[in-house]
Amino acid sequence: MDLTGTIASLYNVIAQAANGGGALNYLTEKFEAGGGFMWPILACLVLGLAFSFERLWTLTKARTNTKQFIVKVKKALDEGGVEAAKKVCENTRGPIASVFYAGLLRADEGLDAAEKAIIAYGGVEMGFLERGLIWVSTFITVAPMLGFTGTVQGMIQAFDAIKEAAQISPAVVAGGISVALLTTLFGLVVAIILQFFYNYFVSRIDRLVGDMEESSIELIDALYELKQRRK
Image (cartoon, rainbow, N blue to C red):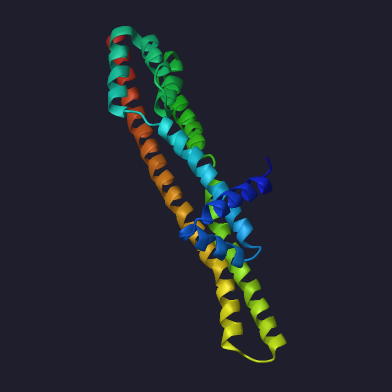
């Protein structure tokens, strides 16, 4: 199903639910009164939420008990060496385990090689965690801009109505301005909703990156101690 069909289906569901009255009925009426710019604003909301839910699922999967994982890796290094630590990383999901595995693969080449591998793969994992956030940020910016554009168009229509009526009637002016401001209202609401998601994701990613950096230092230290014991 294409994007237009998806949005139309969503609107039909809302409209059917609104037949029972209440808040949905009020929102449907205001949506229809807002004019054509309400549809791209709704598209920003639908697409922004789609990317947000995808990131939420990805970041939830990336969650790892870092302290417990580091203890397991260190224990595996002490008891079975690098190969045992690799198996622990293979059986653990999340970016920290992937970064550790990349470092352990190069451990036989020396600490410098392992450290470079950790840094390089850490950048890859960070890019994966941030993937899609640029679109959420784009919709946060575009939705209010569409709302303001719809408001300008509505104001032009209101002034055209005044020109046709050949008088400044409060009823003519108030009605046109009210409709014009609806797009701005809906655009700002969409931006606010998506901004909460975006800030939450940035906070989660920063915390994950911090855990990766801290745990990577501990891995390098553990590899150094292992190397010293083997001398």
